[in-house]
Image (cartoon, rainbow, N blue to C red; front, side, top):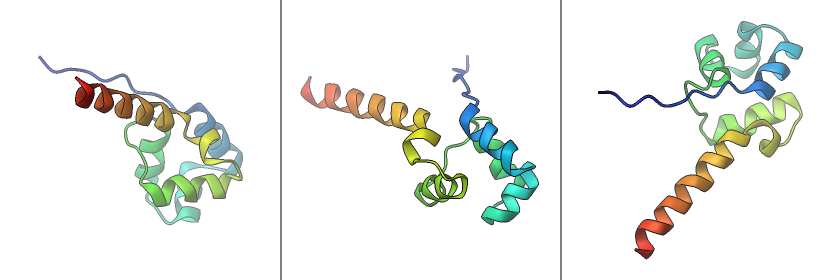
Length: 87
């Protein structure tokens, strides 16, 4: 049986994207595909470092405000790894 992972719609990203225009317009402005914007917005994929900072700059917000789910995911991963090594 496959394990399903809860998808997180990035509400802040979506609201900022809507204020800038369509997914297509934002993709063109950022030099990425419309599919990339859609997948980031819907939580299907996580951005690389360049896009983390690039989109925050494009939208005029902090990395922390835009990508809170990534910070939480990272903190959880780090805590899990620390617990594994300390066991």
